[in-house]
Image 1 (cartoon, rainbow, N blue to C red):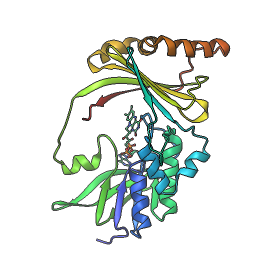
Image 2: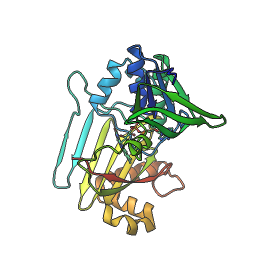
Image 3: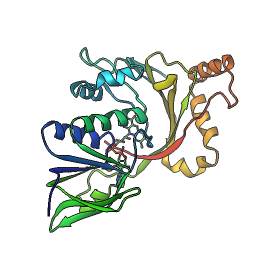
Image 4: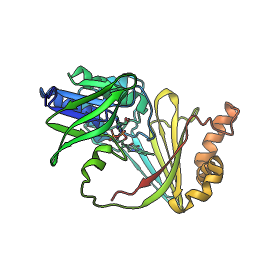
Length: 282
Ligand SMILES: Cc1cc2nc3c(=O)[nH]c(=O)nc-3n(C[C@H](O)[C@H](O)[C@H](O)COP(=O)(O)OP(=O)(O)OC[C@H]3O[C@@H](n4cnc5c(N)ncnc54)[C@H](O)[C@@H]3O)c2cc1C
């Protein structure tokens, strides 16, 4: 079998692209493939803690992110009702966090991988993992309008996210598994200035968090215990807003903003909302 690549990375978002980039910078012949095209969104909120920001800085990519107008976040605050803990999330060297839209972050990372010498194939669907004996040796797939293509490499990296095809092919040992704990929905709000703060509100069986992102928007995610998922699905927006109303100061703040700038939707302009059942990680 002929090998045009040392490494194939399956999945080219925030795990795959930096992997491809770093290997390519070390001189390896790298192919990164993704069925998505970039820029594109994915179901995920997107807070980058200061250590992740530090990684972007080490890779020479932080200036590019800052140039996109993503607001820095200098304060994290956790409001438990009875008391609030607030402070800086970082260190003297890495004082701030950012919450870039995945449309922007992932595109930036894909471009960096390509600039570093990795071949990036977007819109390429992997349909089969090729296994020889006990080793994964290649992938078989196709671009959206092309024929079937097979590529081989010494190492195949699975960065293909949840329900990973590569993982299913090799049946890795599973450990520290937990059932779903939380159902959460998020949306993007206009006219809700956060002044560089990531705010989290924890109440009885409810919680929500707000964080500023690109385009003067604020991401607000609200959730409840997973056992309530099915019942609360009957009125997603109502339950989402009721969770936010449990923190009256925050609720008043956004109500005031919308009194000044009324919009057709009730108090918020929901651009995108999605559900996930987050598996707990200890
Ligand atoms: C609701 C929610 C909120 C989150 N909030 C945060 C947060 O605030 N901060 C944070 O750091 N993390 C957060 N996470 C976690 C974060 O989303 C993931 O850790 C991250 O997306 C994983 O990145 P990844 O590159 O491994 O996978 P993904 O981002 O899932 O990318 C996998 C890629 O593989 C591609 N792919 C899959 N199968 C194939 C195939 N057969 N052929 C071709 N391509 C394929 C997909 O198209 C996709 O682009 C959140 C997750 C969720 C669900």
